Length: 347
Image (cartoon, rainbow, N blue to C red; front, side):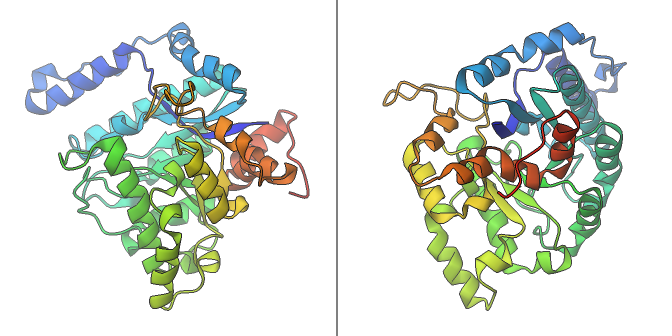
């Protein structure tokens, strides 16, 4: 089974965008505030909207995509905390509907109603709702709710602890994923996303978070940003800080996806990062949608790059494509087992 752990709903019906426009316009003029949260989006419209994802799944040979709201659309820095809570709930409800309609194709990951300066514990009610009531298997966690200005404390700060306690209690991982950037210095997908991945990893090196939360699991997307390419730098910095080896300090809790859009990058990642910490992902219909003129294939067809790796044996390929995802997302594993898709043992 091929599990793609990183997909966003980037083909939403226009009605959702129209609601969002009215919602934000209502901040300045209450008369423009939408009068209802009923979007008028039918199940047929939802099924039609994800046809591109379904076509790519079939074409590229993947089976299931872990699906979350559009990352740039989270926009935690926009509006008020109350507006963000409403927006997160609506976005998560659409994901839930899609995953209910197409359970063999999609599993749900949620958006948290984060807001700059607001305590992360304020997200707990929505986290409990989507996991306990809607069956979500994980969440996206924004390390920079300010949208490019990094005004909140680092991920190791104790203000995050109530949220981490709940993540551990519910046994769901968090993907570290920033949203759109309001800082013109940082292009959102080309700079801010990669900055967020790299910054989060360095914050985790500096702290001792996993001593307090030994079962907490983070996925750092986009291949870990700059991390694999500068692995020696991070090993050396950890050593200077008198931290344990990275394999002990972080790698029981931190995992990386394969949203790297060229073969040499995937090859390097497979050489540097232990196979137990690599999860297949493409961010399909996300950051880069074009076709690479050097290969004639889509940049985000990342399975093609992994298939070319000669260093992975059959057991390692199982881990990357399925086993690690089922281990990091235990609620997904339980859902698949319930549907008659048990994982392998011994890997």
